[in-house]
Image 1 (cartoon, rainbow, N blue to C red):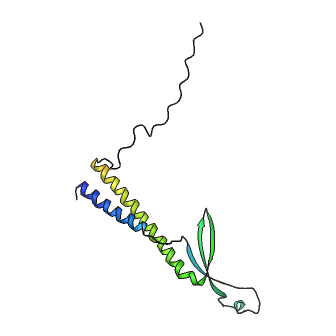
Image 2 (cartoon, helix red, strand yellow):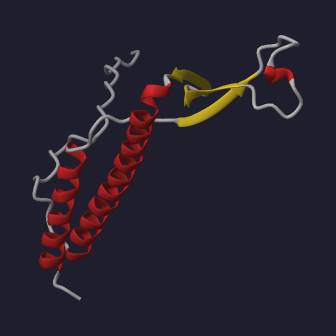
Image 3 (cartoon, rainbow, N blue to C red):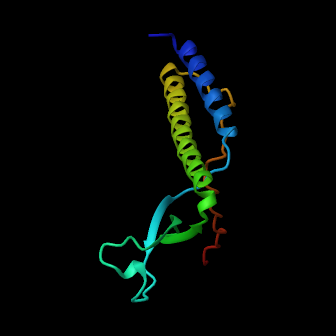
Length: 142
């Protein structure tokens, strides 16, 4: 196994490369692209026939926002672009996960080696809760 300093250097290099890839991400969208067919409801229309696909396809981008499903219609001309944006979002998520994992490993290696964080020690007293005010001394009854 490599010495801790070499391991940290290797991990920091990997982290720097992941950050560069994150910065280079393009347009992205979250969600699922769904192809839909619909029936118009007119009895004489071809879509009312048994086994007919219906009208379409029409494309929808579906995603969850604050626990609710949000759907947006995507024009057929933008389907390929939307697929690429969804793929870029998945790439971004993968890179972010990798960055978190590498950063955690850097912290673990430094901790195991007893190394000091290069960003400096935490400010003394910064994490303490504020002291409570003391009650004033009361005079004793005579």
